Length: 295
Image 1 (tube, rainbow, N blue to C red):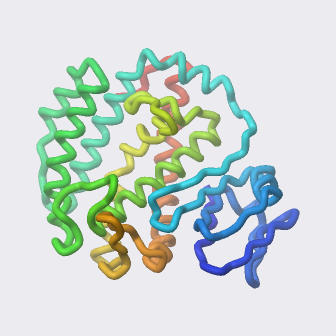
Image 2: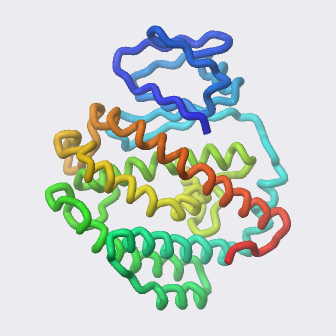
């Protein structure tokens, strides 16, 4: 993914036949796969058509990073993969077990970097014996409590409440984690669309309203690496308490703070891209040939 982020106040964007013009710079469409914009930047319908015609997806981020809009071409692609996704549905449990097992392994290895040792042997036995995705989610939930009990000890106590909070996030650490989880969820969605998948058809997470369940499935494999990247933002003091705002009991990353971490997020995208492509390719082989490649 070639990602271009334009997150600047009072900037005027112009779209011509071949590029985006902004201030004294021109960015050719051929150098963009994904365009990220803040909510105050305006797009004409003609601009949207020009972007999608050039196979550029656009992700728009709200003021408090709590709402995202995704604009993507309506062109159909690889419809046989979507049919294979439905046919593979009876094998959901196999893939769900793979996701949860490797999520636990990744999180265990993450804490091991800080000399915190977790024994996940009993959870792995439970995963093997599980007969439903609900059981797997229960195993994951119990493990998450143990993981985050240790995770928050790695960060200044003034920046968190020693627990995971999501909707809404209640402290700067949780606000940053939720923000980056949401961003990567949408980038996974775009990559799935580029392969021809239907992102709303998942195997661990169930389809529900506007939820991209398959994106959530894959996100589980990358949360530990995102968590480590978040730790580094605070250890290096790239983000500090003044970069956050408190509104209606929730905590959000301010515009100025968001600008500071974009380059770090793009760097993380590049690190995770090869593994994401491998995971999507592995899933594609499994659903197309109905092989269990998940071990």
